[in-house]
Length: 97
Image 1 (cartoon, rainbow, N blue to C red):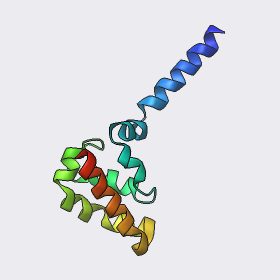
Image 2 (cartoon, rainbow, N blue to C red):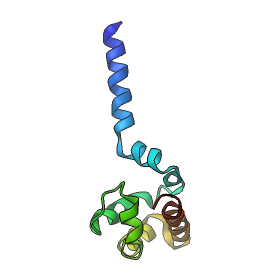
Image 3 (cartoon, one colour):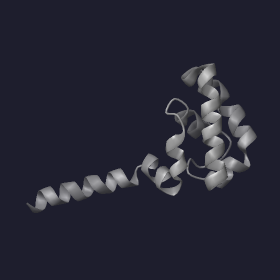
């Protein structure tokens, strides 16, 4: 019984510590970014010198971030889906940046 409790506690700790869970807990609006564009934004954040949970940094470099993520977002979401990613990213900055 104690072993199964330990396993459950360990799994809960791993899940709660995952970057995606932390990002959403810090800024719930992150969940609204379309899945096709979210990895692009995270890669672009690192490319412009921000941590993937540092919203003030990312939002302060929004134009750079947008330029860095653009081709990835278009590849992943299509040209028609790109505006939704941009709108959601701007909402994150409005709420959490």
